[in-house]
Every structure is written in structure tokens, then in C-alpha cells.
Amino acid sequence: MKNKIMILPILFYSTLAWGQAKSIQERLGYPKDAKLVIIHADDLGVSHAENAASIAAMEKGSVSSASIMVPCPWFPEIAAYAQSHPGACLGLHITLTSEWKYYKWGPVTAKEKVPGLVNKNGFLYSSVDSVYQNASASEVETEIRNQVLRAKQFGIDPTHLDAHMGTALQQLDYFKAYLKVGHEFKIPVFIPRQLETPLKVKFDTMVSDKDVLVDYILSASPQDFKNGFANFYTNGLKNLKPGLTYLIIHTAYDNEEMRAVTIDHPDWGAAWRQEDFNFFSSPECKKLLNDNNIYVITWKEIRDKIVRK
Amino acid sequence: MKNKIMILPILFYSTLAWGQAKSIQERLGYPKDAKLVIIHADDLGVSHAENAASIAAMEKGSVSSASIMVPCPWFPEIAAYAQSHPGACLGLHITLTSEWKYYKWGPVTAKEKVPGLVNKNGFLYSSVDSVYQNASASEVETEIRNQVLRAKQFGIDPTHLDAHMGTALQQLDYFKAYLKVGHEFKIPVFIPRQLETPLKVKFDTMVSDKDVLVDYILSASPQDFKNGFANFYTNGLKNLKPGLTYLIIHTAYDNEEMRAVTIDHPDWGAAWRQEDFNFFSSPECKKLLNDNNIYVITWKEIRDKIVRK
Image: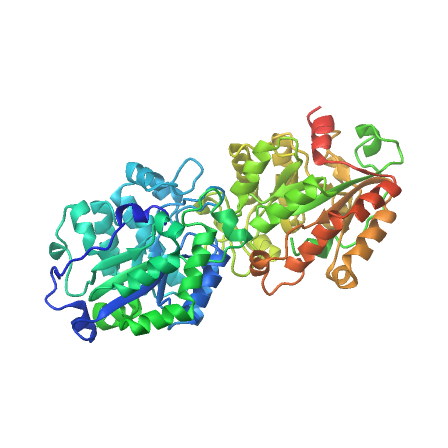
């Protein structure tokens, strides 16, 4: 999800609750000023190192939710885990790109049916821009639906949908397709309030009381990595605002496999992912969450209390 | 290539040279009693660990040739290596199965065109028997040709074709398709003499003086692994016969990735592959080859001196 940060770089402080009379805290039954956070690991399925570290960070650390890339090589491994752990909060990281240099994947839909999504080698495009230049919203809708159907075929009941590298979010017709498929399967979709401005839209015309808007995003940048993640995340958690924050991380081990996957790309690379794992597996992180009265919630809770209520 | 050993378990001692007036030694310009061996690493492209170890074993060890699984996730990495190392002897390990538990791949052909090759999840079947029960020779021919075309699209000029788990070899109509595609692209194909009996065929009716028959196969069994590979390979190399021996190994590192790929399957597993790497990267192996007057040759030499002469 290398490029996601490009359009989601900062916390967005809004007190509005478009289209929704009650606050997210009230809807979920928390104190009205509660600071809610979903600590979310992206990119499951991309590699064994990502699966193994993310499972450990969920089972033993503070990660509350994660999302799976259905087209990726290690999807069957995490799908088997999801099936045998129905309590785990595992959604789908809708994947329309294949961004690494030597390790690639294609769409789950037959390439002939989504020609605009694939490059000359039959892989998804490396960059978000190439997707926007080539794929129609109809192709994107087909692929999103087929990723959901394939996940269900593998025994996953997705807790939510979000968007790898933000691709399905950052163009209005794609966003509508993504929202449509979420509604179709009664799966909550990640809708960041801050997207209203770039999408030039008012979400209150598009969502219902079955949708949940995410108030704030907290996600590290390459500069934060250089300065040290412990500082960045400690500061971020200490300064959470009341409302729902989506804390986006990427947990993997800095091993041979992951260094080869992320070769020539230190940003969101293997060492980066190990640092995310280290922080969110630490006792210090648990203490911070506790000391700052932060409620760590899940998409599963949102799905079951709101979307499928 | 877990099951290949099941039908190719022993050395086959034949002095016949079906369909070919001159011996392989004469055709390649070696002394007529020379012991020729291709030390061959299978399964490149399956994982990063397999690629990295096999490249090291070729560049620094005694491995002379290797073959690539085009449908696998790490194919682009080894294809980039092949393109930048045109002197390396890299063929195609024609892949009609996807045998591991949580790490899978499909055919390179559109699934709609080869329905008999794919299981309900769109992957190649796990077992050779399932392929035989479901896929027509015509589908197999299409897939083999498309694996060659895809390799060429990625800049590979294959030095040879061989067969993952023996699938393309062990049924006559598949074998004919495999031979046909090899001839079509002027790529030597691995034809073990010992297959005449199970295939109930005489190769001299099928091959020309542009083909090369492999006289002997040397490949370790699970029992050999239990007894120690150093013993097995040392003994095998000391007892090579004049003629062409195909020494089939699998070189990878025993790391997290490879243990996850081969989970629940110690035979041909991560430790097995590390042992293969260790032996064929050792100075002892080089000394054995030298002391026993063994000529280590390549498929590239066969391709360029015989098939494309």
C-alpha cells in the first residue's frame, strides 16, 4: 500500500457526522467522548512473513483487525487461518495493483473480462495512476465483487472492505463500485471522512445509518520512519481525538522473503514492517492504550452491531 | 516435484542408443567412454528461497543447469535473472500441478480454455493423478506452449524443457505434446530412456538425431534423505556410468518461507532442499567430480551443439 499515504497524509479533525444522527461512540455503546481506534494491519496474503507476523500481532499484540489481499500468492494460507479462527477480525484489502518489482499477481477475474486492469504481462498494474488510466469502473466493480466471492468461497466471512494503496477509494466512480459491493454483501466499508474534499462529494448523499465513517486516519510516512516509529506512534496515540481513528500499519518480519518482496523500495519495506510489528507487539503499546483510555475496537464489532444489526 | 521419484526410482543401465547412431559423448565431442552429468536444480520460480539458493549453487557450486516453473509467484524474479545472465543454463520445468498445501498457483493459460487443468479454486491440481483424470492432451499441449511463450515474453530463451513431478512425461499423449512443443521451438526436451517401459513405446520411432535421450537418472528418495545425502550423492557420483546422467536436485534455503511453502511435507521439504544446496555447493562435491573424471555438462550445450546446430 505504498501510495496510500500520498493522499491520506494527515489526521483530519472533523466533528461533523454527515448523514448520521448519532456519533459512532453512541452507535456502538461507548461513552460519548470515547477515543475509539481500529489498529489495522494491511496486506495480509501478500507473503508468508506478512501472514505470520500479522497473526502474531493480532493474537499476542495490540492489532485488532487486518485485511487480506485475495489475489496474492499467500492468500490460501491466511484464508485457512480465517476459516479456523472465525473470531478474528479479517476483512478484504481490495487489491487493484501489484506494486512490487519481481513478485507479481493478477486479478482474480478472468483477464479477458477485465482487460483494463491488467498490463501486458497479465499482472495488475504497479501504480494507482495506471489503473485510473486503463480500468473502467465497471471492470473495477467486477473485480471487487469477485474478490469478495472468492474470499467467501475460501470460507472467509469478511468483517470489512478497505482499499490497497487507496486505489478503490480515490476516484469517485471506483469508490461508488466499492461501496455498492459492500452494501450488496452487508460488509462495512472503510470510508474516511477526509475523502470528501478530493472526491468532491458529500457522503451524506451516499451513505445510510448502516454505514460508518472513519473520523481520522493515523498512518506513518517515510519521514516518520526515519524519525523512528516509537516516537510517531506514541505521540499519535497520546493525541487521539474522540471519535473513530483508523490506525493503518503493515506487520511483517524483516527476513529474506520480505526483503525480496520489497526489493528496491525501503518505504513500506521489510524493515519498516518489522518496526510496525515490534511497536504493536510491545507491552509499551498496551500500556499506552490503557493509560490514555483508548478503546481498541474491531470492524467485526461494527459489522455485527451496525451493518448486520 | 514430489512424485517424480515414484516412477523414476532407480538408475537404468542401458547401452542402447535408440534411434541415434552416435553416442551422446561422440555427438558432443567428448571421449567415447566419458561420464557426462547434468547437475540439475528443479523448481526455480516457486519461491524466493529456491531462486536465491539455486542461483548461488549455479554461480558458486556445482549445479550446471536448472529449470523454471513459469506459473509460480516468483517467476518474474528468476526471469529477470535469466534475462540479465544469458549464459546461464535455464530451462522450463513444465508445471501442470500445484502441490503445496497453502501456497498455490494456476495455469498460465486462461482457465476457461483449460478447464480440465484447474480445480474448483482455479488452481492446478495437487496430484499428478488428478491431472490425468481431468486434463486432455490438447489442454496440456496448450498449457505447455503457453508456458514457453510466456517465458519468451519475459526474455528467457529456454535451454530445455523438463517436467515438474513428471506429469508431462508419464502419460503417452501428454509426452507427445511435450515433445511436439519442444520440437516446435527447437528446445531440447528431457527424455529419460527408462520411460520406454511404462509408456510402452519405442523412442526410436518418435525421436530424431536432433533429440537427446538421457541414459540414467540419479535422484534421491526419502530413504536416501534419512540416510544422509552426502552418502547418497558421493556413492552415486563414484558409480556413474559412461553416458549421460541426469542428476536431479532441489536447492533452496531452509528458512521461514520455504518451511511454510513445504509445510506438512518433509519429503522434498525445506531441510531436504538445504541439504541438496549444501552438498552441491561444497568443495567436496567439486573434488569428487574431478577425482572421478566426470564431465559436468549443460542443456545449453546440447541445445546449441545438437538441437539448433
